[in-house]
View 1: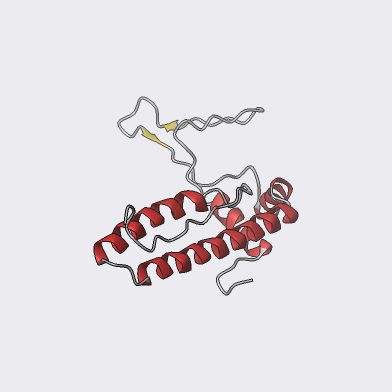
View 2: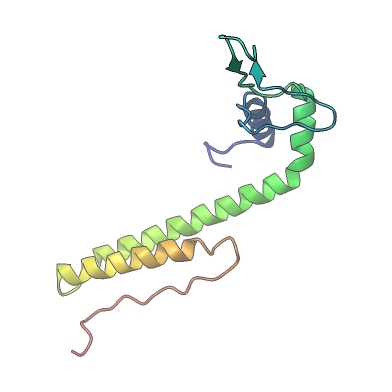
Length: 147
């Protein structure tokens, strides 16, 4: 795992902290007998709106249980593995792009134009790595077409 990789426990802790500190949306509308009246001091000059922060529906341990149930460790591990594979493929494509840029071609303008085309292609193909699509690498041109 790389130096900036996050562990499952760190991920769950972050999710719990974010959930418990989340500003509930204006259209928050609880059910199941929970009552929330967003307006307080109705009909007075001090009427105002509550803006709940987080939730008191769960404590931290209950929120942790919820996230662990929603995102099992195996799913997290698969996402990390796929992310590592994607990063490796992007690094490979970046090295390939550098080789194209550094190629000894006839004109600099031709090199720049081809490198720009390749970068566009590489970005679009990188999005397909996680879906298992294979990227067909282009063959660098060594001379202008028609010569």
